[in-house]
Every structure is written in structure tokens, then in C-alpha cells.
Length: 499
Ligand SMILES: NC(=O)C1=CN([C@@H]2O[C@H](COP(=O)(O)OP(=O)(O)OC[C@H]3O[C@@H](n4cnc5c(N)ncnc54)[C@H](OP(=O)(O)O)[C@@H]3O)[C@@H](O)[C@H]2O)C=CC1
Ligand SMILES: O=C(O)[C@H](O)CS(=O)(=O)O
Image 1: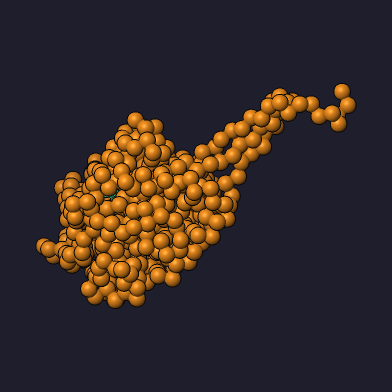
Image 2 (image 1 turned 45 degrees about the vertical axis):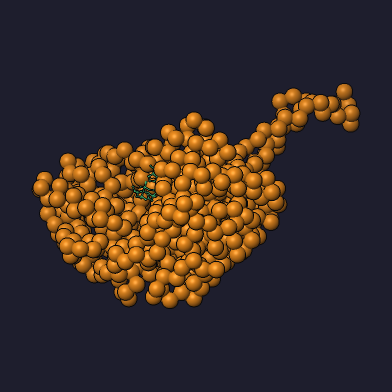
């Protein structure tokens, strides 16, 4: 039975809207009935509420996930694969409804929300296949009477803590490999965007994911995640969010020595060399800067442009930026939705004010569209220098600051001058430069003549303050398995072999 229907969302399947948490196969409220409100960032309207769960409910969820683990682990890989495949198919079958729920709670334009649902589904599809490939090894023995092998086994109960900017994909990028490997999972989604997570749980239940295998808890992050990180039953934490919180959670996991994977903040450089195809570079900059209104961890945060082409590139970028349409994500033609909250708007304004105070110029945009609301125009700054906040802090908004450089060595030095190491991009038509720069950049992912690198088939992740581990690709399931080494002695000499 549906707990709620957003008025005016025109869903084909209102049953996807859940105002209860999914724990041990049941839809539950908080013990004391406490709830958290959920708002539409485009209008400020209250969409509904979700339970404000605490420590006691979290302990019960951990117990349920622990109880479900043996039976889920014992299923054949093919059986887990088939269930995941059905989940993938059902997510795609409900793409429109899931996208509308996402635009309502997160604000991204409907076209982008549809794209995220497809992207989210692709991780379930990919790991439905990877479930059948958790191979081990046979190892040439070191003693005649021994045989050595390895097997890979699921880690166990996993906790996932996810952000608001990709409310579906950041969950499936974790739940896909976890469930494929035979783990069970407890998800704590961002409080701003819980309905996408709960809709995924509804579809998981419909395809026969057993109770306790995939649980979604909403409420106080400190209380829920405090329990998850303290529990010895939880063997792994996977987190996507800010570096600041990632460090907190990594510390909290130390007492129980959990396996952790962290997808954290970024400060992506976008380098345009003088030999680049400038039209292609502008296309790439638009994609890597303004996707999700600049609210992605792999968004370009700094544009480094070689002096000879600086003015030409700036003019072409300005022209393209001014074609973007800011508004409610449900409105036809809108390409930039609202930012997630007032804090996000303030951060963009602070970075612009700081840069202008230190000599930068606003080429386009620069001021919020109205005193109220969370809409901020896509903005380009020129004359930006390393002393400005935008050089070292992640803006996480629609701000493109242009820096100038003179040669390759300076471009690499500027690009690497950050604590972060998630994504980097550069444009050149020189093959030698492509290899030299790609190898010199201190990042987990590098786009060469492209502004879009995210896909389920390639390893997503960063180094330094941008995190630990990789998601997606043939490596993603490694985060959810342990390698066990078996040494079998007493084999004896083979009597078929002459002494
Ligand atoms: N590397 C990547 O793939 C990504 C990185 N990010 C980074 O995350 C930041 C923006 O996302 P944002 O959601 O604001 O990040 P936050 O780190 O604030 O929140 C992420 C998640 O952590 C939870 N959380 C917050 N504080 C605590 C705490 N003290 N203890 C336990 N859990 C906590 C939040 O819950 P609640 O919502 O209830 O506060 C949310 O579910 C940016 O820096 C961005 O770069 C974002 C997405 C992807
Ligand atoms: O949350 C994010 O920023 C995502 O990791 C970005 S992407 O995977 O959609 O590129």
C-alpha cells in the first residue's frame, strides 16, 4: 500500500512512492513516529516526509542484514545474477516515474534524471553479469605434497552512505556489486533525496530480493551511521560524499577494522592546450562543468587555458553558456535546475565574491536570479589566479573559473596543485603530449579530448583526498569480496611418476 502520493507528479505507478523505511522486507516508521520533511528545491514545497530513524531501529536493521547474509551468500551466483537482472529490467521499466521522483526531490532537469536512472540501472546490469565471474586461482605449489588455491567470498554485511547529487546511481553503484558478491546491505541515503532510494527498495522487493538483503534507513546521519560504523557485524562501509565526512567515517570504522571504500570530493582541472580543437574543448567544458548544475564530484572546477587561445576559448564558452536555460527541472527546455540548498548557493556566491575581490572579472552570470529560491545562473570568470578560493576549494556549483598558463610544465603543475585527485580533463591534438600529460596528472581518472568519462564499464574513483577504491568495472566487485587462500597438504607423491 502506498504511503504517499506527491500531488501533481503524474506517476504511472504511485506505489513507488514510499514514506516508510525498508527494513527486513517490511515498510517501517520510526519507533517514536518521528519524521523528517522532504522539500522540492525548485519550489520550496514540502513533498512529504520519511521516518527519522535512530540507533535502536538501526541495530534491528543490522540484525536483519546479518540474519539474511548466510542464505543470500549460499545462493548460486547464477541465482543472484538472475534476481539482479530482473531488478535492472524493472528499474528501466519504471524509468519515467523514477526520473520524476528524482527531479521532484533533487531538482535536476527531467532529461538528466532519466539519464541518471539509465546510468543507475547499468550498474545493476553490469554486476548481474559480474556475479558469475568472482574467480579464484590455482597456484603452482611450493611443496610436492601440497596444492594451493584461492577462492573469493563475500565480505558480509555492508553499510552504504550516499549523497544527494545522484540519488539513484550512487546507491546502485554500491548495491549492485555488493548483492552480486553475496553481501547484504544497509543504505543511508542523503536526507534531501530519500524517495529515490525507497523506490529502488520497492522495486527490489518486487523482483524477489529476499528480506534483509537490501535495507534503506532514513533519519539522523550521526545516529544511524554511528551505529553502522560501530557494529562489528558490519564488515564494510562504502561512502560517497564530501572528503570531510569521509575522513570522519573512516576514523569511525577503525575500531572494528572495517573494509572501506570512499568516493569523495574533487577539484578537477580542465586543460586547454593551444593545439586543441577549441569547439570540441568547449563542448567538453559544457558537459564536464554544468552537468547537474555543476553538482558532481567529477565536474570541472578549474579551467586552465593556454595563453595563445585564452580569449578565443573564453568567448566561445561565454556564447555557449548563455544558451543554457535555468528553471524548474520539470519545465520543457530547462537545462539547469536549482542548487540543492541555500548553503550551496552561498558557496557559489562566496567563491565569486572572493575571486572578483582579488581581480577576477565576471564574463557572464555572477548573480542569483532572484533574492529567493535556489536558482543560480551558469557563470564564467576570467583572470582567475591560484590565490583565489576557487583554485583550492570545490565549488560544487555552476561556476567556471578560467586560469591562464604558458607551457605544458606550468599546466601540469597548476593542475596537480590540489589535495584532491579524482578526475582531470585536457584537450590536445598532439599524441606525445597526450601521453606525457596523462601520465603526469595525479588523478584517478583522466578525460583526454572528452568531458564525459563516467560509465559502469570503467573503474570510477580517485586518489589522495578524493578517496579509496574503485566502483564499477571489473574491479568494482573486489570491494565486496575477500580472497581466501587454501593450502591442502598430505597430497602424497604421484605413483604414476617413476621415482
Ligand atoms: N566522489 C564522488 O563520487 C562524489 C563525491 N561527492 C562529494 O560530496 C559533497 C557533496 O555531497 P553531500 O551529500 O553534501 O556530502 P556529505 O558528505 O555532506 O553527505 C553525504 C552523506 O553523508 C551523510 N553524512 C553527513 N554527515 C555525516 C556524519 N557526520 N556522519 C555520518 N553520515 C553523515 C549525509 O547524510 P545527510 O544527508 O542526512 O546529512 C549523506 O547521506 C561534495 O564534496 C562532493 O564532491 C558527492 C557525490 C559523489
Ligand atoms: O556523484 C557523483 O558526482 C558521480 O560520481 C558523478 S558521475 O558518476 O555521474 O560522473
